[in-house]
Image (cartoon, rainbow, N blue to C red; front, side):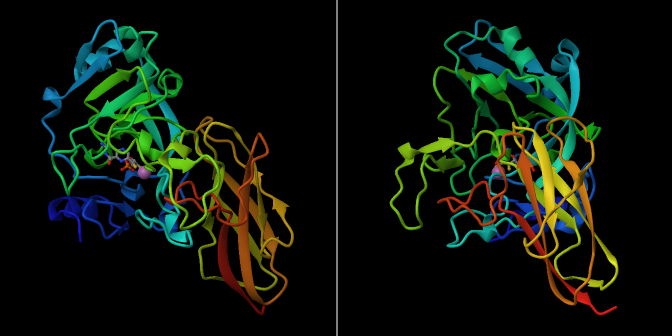
Length: 370
Ligand SMILES: Nc1nc2c(c(=O)[nH]1)N[C@H]1C(S)=C(S)[C@@H](COP(=O)(O)O)O[C@H]1N2
Ligand SMILES: [Mo]
């Protein structure tokens, strides 16, 4: 099954290098070679949809409704929203919780993302907290519920996705209702005219085409909030074990992770030469503390140099150099750690839906005689 042809054509024109997944919905990711920039350009940024790409009214007709557990329900046009609230820009990694799912064994349900369902962009918008405060958040509100016009492809009577945020994250200063990405109006494929930006949370929490925010007195129960969707088991579950959704919890802060952007898989290097290993490290809520790199499959490690970056939710470039001494197969590894001592696991930690794969990134190559 392939996605709708018009949407696919739009994607191919605006994002030429992406791999399009076989799925009725439009889902595409860049090869790692396109992820080498500190700020991922929109033309290299992955696209993830649970349903259709909705037909949208003109921006002048777009409204955002705030209702539920608020004192003063409100409805904002785009112009009014921008005029009333302070505009903020921040840099943040957006990563799909299913990124790296293709590495799970046994394979799990869900799109077999390689490692490209991640990017780091500058997001501009208004603080969700400001908009909610203006509406007067009741004490009963513990969660937000986000709504958008996209529909399931198999059942157009149902929303494709309706996720939300715990109230503390909704009120956090970094959480935005964004209308621009990398200084340009938010592209339609990325949720324009309005989307949630929830830095550190999985992509599923970054609702696209946002047209309504409902304040809820309990955890939001919208489409794909329940069951095992975007949830991790609270205790390990072995492959094949029966699933009890009551023992799953919503994924919130993403784990520490790194991606080697050079060298690329299958590289060659000449003995006696310097091999520069570079890439990015990032983490959800807990700051990134460091990245170590190995050029011999983890026998020995070097602490990589970490560059400063654009704030706590941006990824940071790391770099390490090795003089290649011996001929033969080379296995380059990067392992990030956060400020609380969590490290990327050397092997995948299996879970039933294939989420949050942050295993150490491994890139294989060959050293030739000099
Ligand atoms: N309305 C809507 N918002 C959505 C989704 C969706 O299917 N519909 N998918 C979510 C998921 S799972 C991810 S990973 C991100 C992807 O954002 P992007 O397509 O801009 O990369 O959007 C999120 N927001
Ligand atoms: Mo996602």
